[in-house]
Image (cartoon, rainbow, N blue to C red; front, side, top):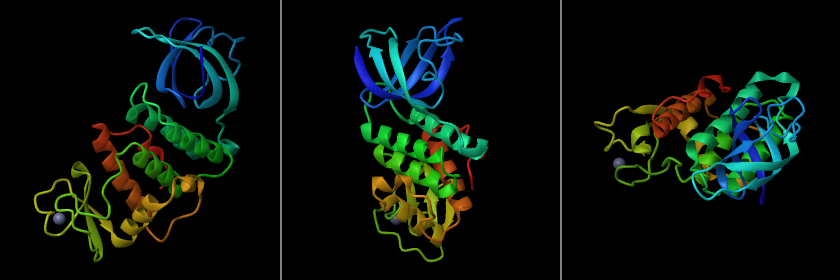
Length: 247
Ligand SMILES: [Zn+2]
């Protein structure tokens, strides 16, 4: 039996009474476990087996191909958007989608777990805005080692000196300077203020993941569009929640 803090990122019906629950856990990273009886009206987990619920969980770990068993789950909190705001709910689903897609099974990422729980705690109390989502994304990409190169050209390594616009090549993982941009497709264009805002976000400490205001002047719609394309490239397909995020 192993105890760990856990966030429910996906639920799949497994039998009439049970779910397979995908958890992002603090100690073990992403794991799948059977929650027996969790689909019954009176179930042993009460409300801890629910999408976006954070709990103190006890797992019976299986070594082979078999699934873990969720033995206990004591609810810490479950995500409910403030005033039923759908934008907050979609952004929270997006946290689950990112953890599901971008993390590997059994790869413990305690800082990423803490950041996810911290933003969900915030987003269930505060009306969401685009910058709050950008902070989560920037922190997650950084912790996962897939933060795009923003200051230096991905091709030649030179520091990019922006004039009015900066070219960003999602397939190549970052910005490209004027000399290297030829032939790079697709090539997205960011205005200098938006690029600077993104750089400022990337330089914030992890603790700033729960800050709420814009980092500086910049177009959130423009940054949203570039992040969508960059992340779609990372994943190899579009994201379900991207069209539903605040701009
Ligand atoms: Zn270059």
